[in-house]
Image 1 (tube, helix red, strand yellow):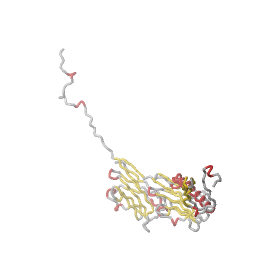
Image 2: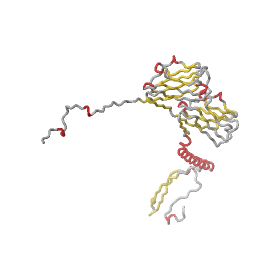
Image 3: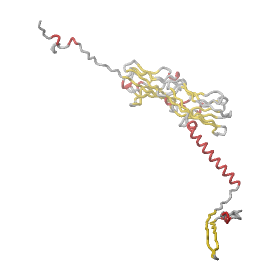
Image 4: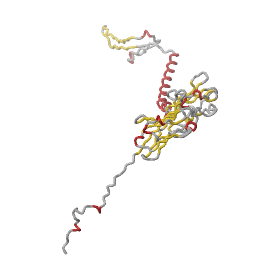
Amino acid sequence: MKTDALETGDLSLHLTKLQLSDSGSYTCTVRGFSMGIERELRVTEVQLQVKERIPSWAKALLVLLVLLAIGLLVSGALLVHFRQYFMSVYKVEVDSEVEFVQLPCKTIVHLPKDAKVEWRTRDARKVHVYQNGSDQPEEQDSSYRGRTEMKRKLLEPRDLSLTLKHTTDRDSNIYTCTVYNREGRNLMEKQVELKVKDCQVEVEEGEESVQLPFRTTPDLPEDATVKWYCYKPSYRRVHLYENRSDQPDKQHQDYKDRTEMKKDLLKTGDLSLTLKYPKETDRGKYECEVINNKDGDILRQKTVELGVNVRTQIKDETEDIRNRSSSTDPSPLMADQTV
């Protein structure tokens, strides 16, 4: 305590070399004597709690945890800010009649020469496979065979973009490009969403003909089956090409003698259907399928929506004023006049 505590009134106590056992309740009492009698003049209580000193390694750990927490907060804020960029899928939209479309995929990351590149659909169908410096068409899904192309030596410019030919509405999908190393570890992955607009054709009722377009690769099997059918509003077989010739006896009666397809259609890849004398009941959704007779796989597919506009006739109700009945009321100008 201070030496002049009674003079200054500062009765504070300084306790040094604190220990955990020093924690407790302290009472300061001031007593005085008057006429030989002891009296209490002041009483003060102070609660003291002594905490264990944090070691230096614990301090360092605490600082690290604080910095880590701040980093997580900052990175979390950045992820929230840029999540649309990181999570978004590159989107491509084209008409169904375009000759080809490119699904972009470029990277600045150096890729090993023995890397494997795979393009897949959302339902895990293999669209294109590149490995050992060349394409692997035997690994493709049959519906994409002969319709895809990637750049030669694509690993050097690191341009993994895929060109898809003769697109149809059936090609609308989310495509994923994945790069693997020799051990099969995923090195990179990017997604592209492709939207192919529905093919719509309109015609006036009474026209001589209308064409439902479908052009694809000219490398279809010679014994493939081509089937056109209307599935909405009701199912009807429109045209069947089977065993290298048309099969008119297997058509729905509504289309008898009204459909035609080009000769050598499997060699040229032009599977368009000509429908003669379209009428109102022809409107609906049509689909063409190319089927491999060996295994039953669908090699190509396309949907076409046909709209048939009905011509309306306006009845001529023009009245010849010369044919009006003479029994009508006379005009005021025709009234009898006195001269």
